[in-house]
Image (cartoon, rainbow, N blue to C red; front, top):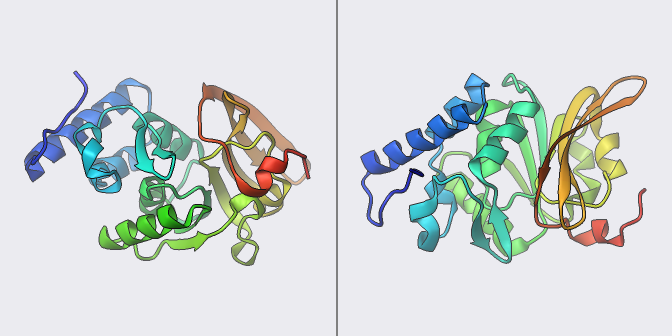
Amino acid sequence: MEPIAPPGATADAWSAARAGMVAKLREYGIRDPRVLAAMSRIERHRYVPESVRPQAYEDGALPVGEGQTISQPYIVALMTELLALTGKERVLEVGTGSGYQAAVLAETAGEVWTIEIVEALGRRAEATLREQGYGGVHVRIGDGYRGWPEAAPFDAIIVTAAPDHVPQPLLDQLKVGGRMVIPVGGQYQDLLFLRKTDQELVRREVIPVRFVPMTGEAEKGASR
C-alpha cells in the first residue's frame, strides 16, 4: 500500500504517511542516513497544492501549478544521495519548483542557492520555505542556465529540469572535486552524475528519468 493521508488528516496521520514514504525509500535502496532523516522531518504535503495533498507521500510526481511538478520522493532522495553531502557544502539548485528539494538540501548541505524561471512558482516556493523555517535558502527568480556566478564556486549542483546538454556555465561554477546531478535529453532523459577533477569531467549515467524540460536559454539547444 502507498502511504496516503486522508483529507483533514491529523499530524499523527501525516507523520505515519511520511514514515511509510521513508520506509519505501529504504526498500528502493536509499542508504544515506542524512537524506533519510531529512525526508523524515520535512512535511512534503506543505509543498503541494491542497487538491493533491492526500497523495503527498506516495512515490510519484505531483502537479504544483504553472505546468510544473514536484519530483517523486525516490528521485529527490536519489539525486540528493548522489551528491554525498556532509552538511558543509555550498549547493546550487536549478529549478526550485515547489521548494521541496531545496528544503531537503537545506537539511543536508551547508548553504543553498536555488533558481526558478517561473516567477509565480518561485515566489510561492520562497514563501513556503520561509514558513517552514528555511528562510536561509537563497531564492532567485530567473533563468538558471547561467547559474549564480556571484555565489560560485559550488561544491554541488543539482538540476531539476532537463536540458538537451549540460550547460557549460554550470560546469564552470562547479569546484574541482565538486559533483553535479542533472537529467539530460529530450522527451526522455538520462540522469547523469558528473564529478569535476583537475584534469577531466567524470561522467556516469545513473538511471533513465523523465523531467520537465529546462526552458529559457537552454531551449536554444546549442552546446556552449
